[in-house]
Length: 185
Image 1 (spheres, rainbow, N blue to C red):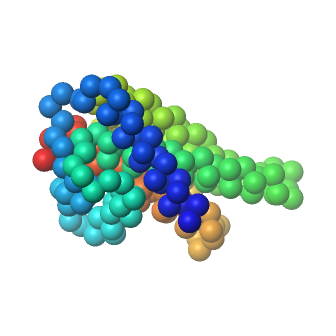
Image 2 (tube, rainbow, N blue to C red; image 1 turned 120 degrees about the vertical axis):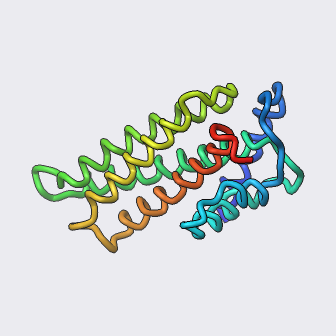
């Protein structure tokens, strides 16, 4: 229930930001369902379902695609914060003098991904799509590097599952952003 409320709040806040100002020029409007259909990677049907789950709590009326991209991007930012908090907890609980290198690297990569996604959020809110594609890609690589680093010692752990879910959400945000950047309408 908390998660659904948080997603609804993010969607509402995003809609208000976009609709309170001028709409982004040249950006199409569509329903969230159409946005998920048009943005999906046919090789990864789970991203389509995640897109639906991410945007489902929003209004059924057509919105500018920027709203959907911002919603998924902001949700990714919230998830990154939660994952970074878990990494910090694990590092504090570590009983060894030197923290596990995989966790230290993961924390650094998440910091990088978070900074990129925060910039994308700001850019999308200003209708500035110039750097978004590269920054989405770089955020994906940072989260992927964290996941790869967790493979040997943390596979099957809740942290590994959270990072894997974050990676999928990063790709959903990337695919929705591609509707703006690549004109996949």
